[in-house]
Length: 335
Image (tube, rainbow, N blue to C red):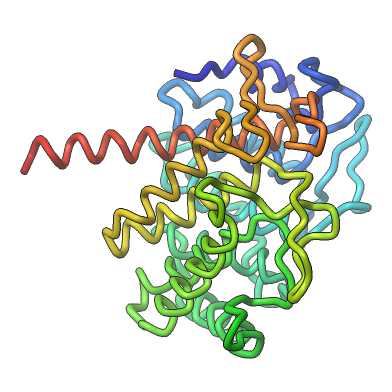
């Protein structure tokens, strides 16, 4: 059982801080929309997470402008748009979608309102990952489904894939960067709603292609951020970031849910095991003393800083796999 100690230490009166210096939270790093979105997703999964969830959703609400747009970064009391990104907004929409279905009505209503404010703008997204996060949000959020918006965005992503794929390249772009798993996950998720097998085919083709690359050595070997993976080039090994392991775990779990093929569950479990030493450096990224997660695997070992993105990725993956294990046990008892 993992401790939530570091996650709680990173949370102050405003929300969750962005970075740590080693295991010590860094107040000078400020608060970001996407980290608080991830924190909200984790908090709503906790039995006693109401007050935490309210803190994170309140921060997200305060970041939103009258027109529904968001500022991503609060630093020293001032909101800035310097590092705004569609991907951050996509994550925030996903968090609000999941929050709209949580057991606490005050959280649910607020998440729905925030989501609806921003929804008219998503049709203009150009980032494939932002589109993917938004698609998953539209699929999962039963209270806020917008079928026309979902179909338009899903067609965009499917057309992008069909324009880029070739006999030896089954991907949405001519390169792979971060959080790659969210792209096939979105395609599979759309199929759950509209039943269009084109989306399932694209989702499984791209996920299988991605998994063949990432599990080539029998364990998860994430695309490194030193140049990323350009089509036809060498795959960089470092730095490998925890958020990418979470992305793969969630994508493989989605595929397992739809296909019931054990190979996808096995790869989700290997993505989870990446955090605990089943990786290229054979080093655990979990700090048992602090409850934190190291920021990356590097050529020399690990990046010893323990920021919000890392620990939230670990804890969300832990929760996913624990829930999956509980479901498997429940299923075996009822059969």
